[in-house]
Length: 143
Ligand code: DQA
Image (cartoon, rainbow, N blue to C red; front, side, top):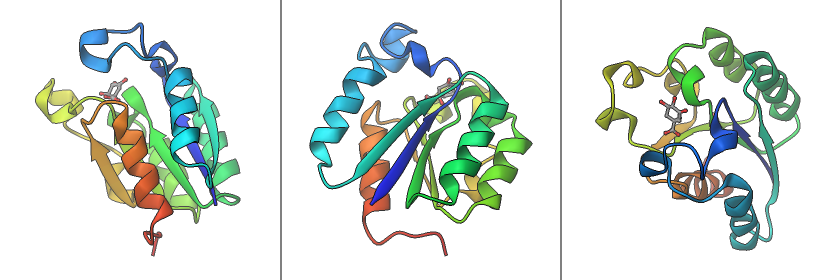
């Protein structure tokens, strides 16, 4: 089974950026842990601060992998184009957020992508990614 993780803007700064909100562990460090937790899952990681590159990766991975774990970060709240890309591919996409966006500013309460994702996991810190992989590696498929 192959799962693509895609992180959006500013998530390259995980571990450094607002540690009170996002924690102090870098994604590179956490990704190593994920590979140990899921030895039978082929995990790929991609991060970009650029909307078009995220869309390109959704299109590329979305026809060739078994699932996508997507933290679209700030684009979650604005991007019709990322929503359209998710709809365009057959792979199930799980939306994740590190922080509980509903406990934060109101503009973070709206997601442009939730309705076209297979499911949503919010607010469990980096563990949100593990939970999303658990969901995809189970019997959950886009239907
Ligand atoms: C985030 C929440 C977004 O509102 C924010 O813009 C991010 C990170 C999260 O993982 O908690 O960059 O997606």
